[in-house]
Each structure stands twice: as structure tokens, then as C-alpha cells.
Length: 364
Image 1 (spheres, rainbow, N blue to C red):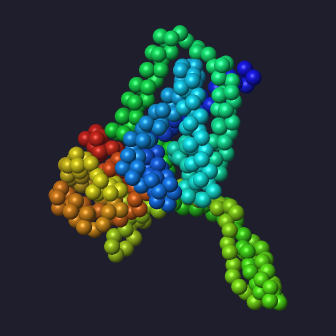
Image 2 (image 1 turned 90 degrees about the horizontal axis):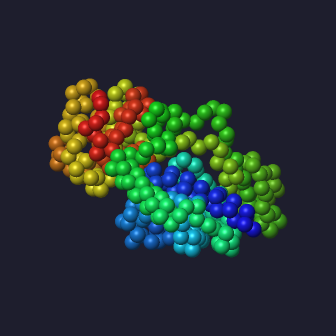
Image 3 (image 1 turned 180 degrees about the horizontal axis):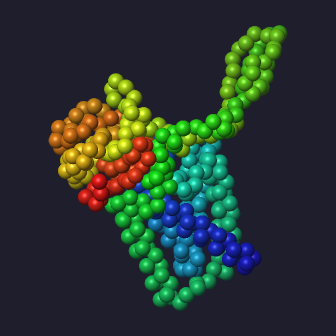
């Protein structure tokens, strides 16, 4: 039992640290995922949506710290009970999400590793078993340092996590796992290779045969049945290849300008998923930066999911010399974790990106 507990302790501790650190690298992204869970379509806890970022930072730091505490053997009673409470909650959450098909990706490992809802539930179920093993054998959890060493290590770990979270929120994630990271081409990310796996569909046809409804299952072909057609239901068995970039567009009221702008050599996108939620200090920095970019022959456009009135207000209020086009809110949030944020493209390839705090440091 002792060795099983120690193996479980190492596995759970390391996994919590890795999972927590990946989300700690991008707490804003995790807060977007929490907003999905809090939404009316999932848990219907919409009153928590304004606090999603604060909850996100707390949860990811707590996750990393608990993993550290478990490995160190620091405050074992508090640590094990906390781990048990956290995993019970997330096991329920992932089961609810999977069973009712509410959230397609749990966000357990941020954008570094995508898990389906049922994969997320299975992962949490395994963790629950391991934590129960640790709980049953908690007498075998011994500290690896003296009391002072444990306290100092625990405090340093917490301060380091807090400092790292503050840094990435004030700038951008230290590691970018998204499809819009520097060096990636957006056009290529939206395309589907010729030899890509195709979706696998199952069709359940219903016919009235001699006064009785009967079902016939095929892979798409119309069944040869001597009866009256009633209806058909389609089930996706395998989604096939899904392009890493979806819902990206650059649209005016009249037309889709996506390809026009993605072929331009020097393009700067000012990304604002919601103009009314953009940081005032960041908006005030746009005028000098974009005017300088235009003078150096860059094409500058804005991207936002906000309405036309908000776009007109933005341009007039800050005396901006560029137009803002329409793009899906979720896509803009994925492009750059800043509102406003700057993205520099060359024929669709991401050359650089920056948080509004770092606009002055961008070299054009």
C-alpha cells in the first residue's frame, strides 16, 4: 500500500502542476472557458461571469500549489482534502458537460492539449481513484524537508505563481499554443488538405413498411426499401479533419474581405473582441502607433465583434485613421489575449503580436 500511495502521490502531484501551469500561462483563456461553463446553456450561473478572470487565477494557482504541496508533503491533511474536493467537483462538471454535450473542450490543459468531453471525464475519473488511494493511505505522506524548508518552499511557489500570472496578464502568454502563434499562416490554418480524413456519418432511415415503422442504418446511401419514407436522422461517428482555425473572417457590411487582407504584405490588425470592454489606456495608445505604422506603408485595420455604432464611436472618439471590420468574438479572443491587441501579418503569416501594454516596444 505504501508504494502504491507514493506512486499515486507523484503522478497526481506532477499532473496537477503541469495542468495548472499550462492554464497559468494563459489565465485569460481559462477565464473564457469558465464563462462557457457559467453560461445559461451549461450551469446557468451567469452571475459568476463577471468574476471569471479572478476565479480563473485563483483556481490555476491553487492547482499548481496543491500539486507542489502534495509532492513536498506540506500540510497533507489540508492538501489531500482540497485535492479530493477539487477533483469531485471537476469530475461532476466534465460528466455533466459530456453527457449533455454542452462544452466541446474542457480546457483542462488549455490550448496545449485538446480533450473531448468524455476524455476529460475519463481523466478526472482516473485522478479521482488515485486521490482516493492517497486519501486512504494518507498516513504514508511524509514531508521531504524540515518545517522551515517546507514553509519557505511553499511560500516561494505561491509567490512565483502569483508573479507569473500577473506577468502574462499584463503582457501575453509566455508560450503560445494557439493556431495564431507567431510563425503560423492563417490561410493555411483555415484550409483542409486534400488527403485529410473525411467525416464519418451514420444515417438512420425510417420507413413505413406494411403499416409499421422500421429503421434502416446506412453510411449515407439511400436504402432500397419497399415502403413509404418517413424521415432520417444523422449521427456523426467521426468528425474527420477539423482545420485548426475556424470562424476567422474580415467582413464589412457589404462583403467578405478575408482573402484580400490575408494576401497583403504588411498588415497590422488591431484586435478588439468588444470595443465597450476594451482597456481605455490601450485605446489611447492606438492613435500614435497606428499613425506611425501607416506612415511606414503598413495597412492597418481593426477587427471586432461589436456593432457599427461602436466602431464609428471608436474611430471618432480616438481620432483613428483606420476602419474596423467584423470578426467572430471567439476568434478574436483566440488571436491575441489582449483587448485591444496588436497582430502583424505578412501575407497571412503572423510576424508579431503584442499586448496593448507593449505597443511602444513593437518594431516596425
